[in-house]
Length: 78
Image 1 (cartoon, rainbow, N blue to C red):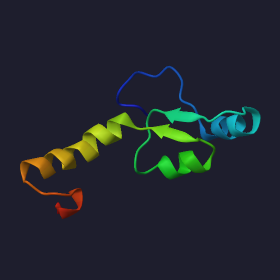
Image 2: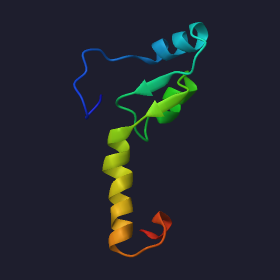
Image 3: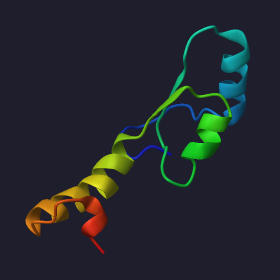
């Protein structure tokens, strides 16, 4: 489920497997991708993933905290 847009259709992993076999081009999976499912999406045929909501809500929150606390790397945050 994507939290950044309404979707009329939810694709499943079978579509990625089909595209990998039939289309001689890289494929990009978009929507609803997060830290819990990205490996499954990539292992089922996606060449790339787009995960804007996950990045902006999770990673950027840590990044901004890093800046606010004058830490030099995200790894320094607990």
